[in-house]
Image (cartoon, rainbow, N blue to C red):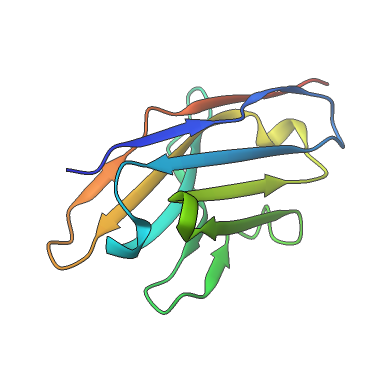
Length: 117
């Protein structure tokens, strides 16, 4: 059982930056893939950025060039650096993980990102 805890959300002006972190209860070396998602009120949850099973990164077109996903194996964390934030980026951001071998999917509780107009 993997527990994920997101942090780093908050209020930021358009054009500002935030760094989200996702702390895993287990070594991320035991995790097949990890990703960041977001869900705005009244909208479906969407994939924002992810590590593929090969270790490469992929981004939604809407955030490509502005967001960067990274990981720190020693700290069992995955981060999302968000630069040049837009009002459209406001949402609850969730971390997800797929565990190796079993392919079970786990989700964090989410962290709120608010971008003022």
